[in-house]
Length: 394
Figure: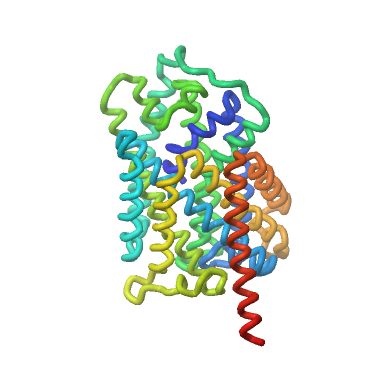
């Protein structure tokens, strides 16, 4: 979470919220916290690859579980595209951004198929690099004397604040990857809940500091109009080195997130393919590298297509639709758990599912239409597959 989303989400969020960026951030954080507690509670009980896809099947039935898994796959595929676009926006000028973003996806997809993922050491390195860059942003942004020229942006409106919260939720959603890797975590019943809640708390504090610095330096309007807001903040200092630091931080955060997302979506696709909710071809695990190589290659191709046909705002909106659908199912599943398995009050699950539904409804119409259409395709595939299976039995 730290670094990847914060470099990308503030621009479309500021464009939607105007002067209501801070309430939007608080709302996104509240929904994320409710979703995190539900995810942690479920992952402790069902520590297997697939996250809410598995727990949704167990608690609510196969169709609901499929909806969660499909939402995760399409949402995180779009998130991967957003990360690739963010990487390119910070490191190369406009004419080269699409080719560079696609090249990054191809490279990291190949790396993932060889079983090279984010180790604990690499994760620490990426977080440190991101935090150094964000510290530079916070220091320069909060001490900037250019704030008198900052663009105040448009007045806040309720729908705009809700839409911005949906965009900002994109930046918080990384904790799902902990749950999807449940089979690979030592002592998951203890480790996963602690990791999810701790990570989210730290991220909330970091994002709040960055939001204050960015709005102070650029104003809501300046934040909305920048393709790379963090770089725009440090550019107000008039020095070359802060921009280089932010470029390195954004590149490390985006590529690290992209690497982890491909792995996470691959594991969920593997779990779905094992249950025939995706073609069985995706269930193959490489005999040497022990990764779902076919699923990851297919995901890489889909991400490249999205990078080619959409922009950052579209990728984030589409991602938020799929991920919020996933967490809506997770909240309902957590609400149904027995008393001995519940770690948090049921009220948090209720707030979480209501928040997910409201934020989805507030997303741009194109994101909603696209999300509904792709979700319908997935549901239609499952219905056709079940019908074919019944026909074969007869």
